Image (cartoon, rainbow, N blue to C red):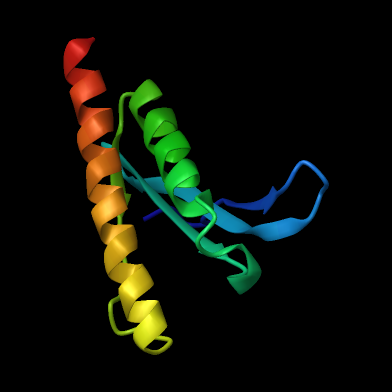
Length: 104
């Protein structure tokens, strides 16, 4: 892992603070990506969009992407439902990105 993770603020076009993303070297061949979003912005597609953009950025740098999550961070039944839906969306997104990568 990098000595000092890079953390970037995420804002809407109106400059509302959405949250932040992490993007830094994980090792010589890969980048670690992650995000923390304000609850007010959950369920609006920001996580999927940010994930896609960061994966594409890592691939453009000829690096793989490392994503880690902790299923122990729970916020109740609604959170669990959103978590599993997000995982399904993330897997679909990763599949789409990988399919595009294969075409290159």
